[in-house]
Every structure is written in C-alpha cells, then in structure tokens.
Amino acid sequence: MTDTGHASTTIQDHSGIAEQLLRVLERFADEFSTRGVPAHLTHIVREEKYLKGKNIGQEPERFVEEQLIWPAISVFDYTVWTQPYGYPKWDKSRPDFEVRNVNCGLDCAVIGEIKTPNKFEYAEQDIINYLKSDLGEPTIGFATDGIRWQVYARPEKSADSIPIADVDLHEVYRQLPNRHEEEESYDKHRTRERMVEAGVEELHRHTIEKRVAEIFATDSDP
Figure 1 (cartoon, rainbow, N blue to C red):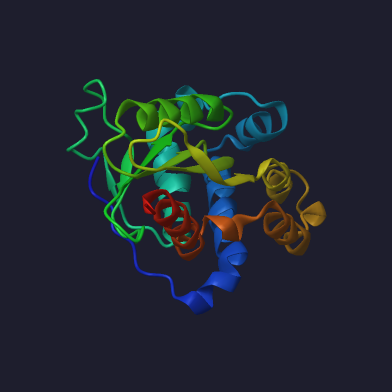
Figure 2: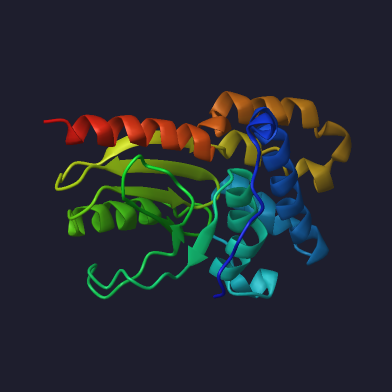
C-alpha cells in the first residue's frame, strides 16, 4: 500500500462533517451498483453478511480501504500512513495505519486497525492487543470496519485503555441500499440526521485531540 495524504479540514467545516461523510457512504454504496452487485450491499448491511471478493472483483480489505476508510478518515481530518514501519515491537506485526497529524499535547503514537464490514470485533481486539503490548509511550488506537468506529487512549505505562469515542453507523448503512432498490424511499435528510445522532462529529480530529490531551495531561501530573 502507498502512503496516503489528505487535505486539511478547517474548523468551520467541522459542523458539516455529517454531510461530507454521507457523501462518502453514498459513493461507497454506489460502487456496488457500478460493479453490478447492489444486492451484495443489501446482504452486508441488512443481513450482516461478509464482503466477498468474488462479488466485487477485488480483495475485500483493499476495496474497503479505497472506497470507504481512507475517504472517511479524510473527512475526519486525519493524515495517515498505511502499513507504517517502526512498530516491530508488537510481535513483528504492524498496524494498518498510523495517523501523523494528531496533537496529543505530548509525544504519542496514533495507530489504527481496519477490518471489513461486520468484522468490527476483530479490529477491536487487534487494537486492544496492540495497546497492551507496548506501554512505553501514550498511544491512541482506532478500530473500525467502516460501519462502527472506536477510539481508545492508553496513557504511558498504563495497561488500561480508555474509550473516548464509539460511533455506530448501522442504522445509516441500512438506508443506503434504498438508493438503488427503491430510490423514492431514500430520505437523504433523515439519513444525515441519523449520522448526527450517532455522534460522527466525535471522530473529528479536533475533538479527539481535546479529549486525549486531557487524559494524557492528567496521567502525567505528579
């Protein structure tokens, strides 16, 4: 995989994050139709089936990264490096990405694990294992399958990870097949409202930076 850089999102754009992310999700849904398999999206989001490479004509993890995860991360205003070096301390494995532009208030690592839709628990377990494996510096961990996003903060030399964001977009995803099954029933405005209700703005870089800075500052107090 190649390194991925993204344009910055201003603070003024923050209030429009749901609209921006909805466009990402709609393009993701439309890609299934472009590839001639709109029903596969329905099976994934409504029946919790797994994404199949033979249906989309591409390796599932790469498809999800390109069509969903990297565009979403851009909306949240993160700059990432994929498959970063420098993490051999975790049993010779590497996280799926490293975030390069988070200000924690002190030196910290920011890493993430990605799985395909409906395999969130595997991403969650992987990131928790990473956070427990190296306690030498404060670390932020992202776990996502594109439908659910969790963010953890783990202070330096602490074995405990603190959840700081948990955004579940299942109800949003369930609406997306309507764009191709029965377009007249797809309510874009209501779908966007569901995103706001799910708390998507909690994932924006400015919000995460504020929360982790408070946690790490408290932990470092004498």
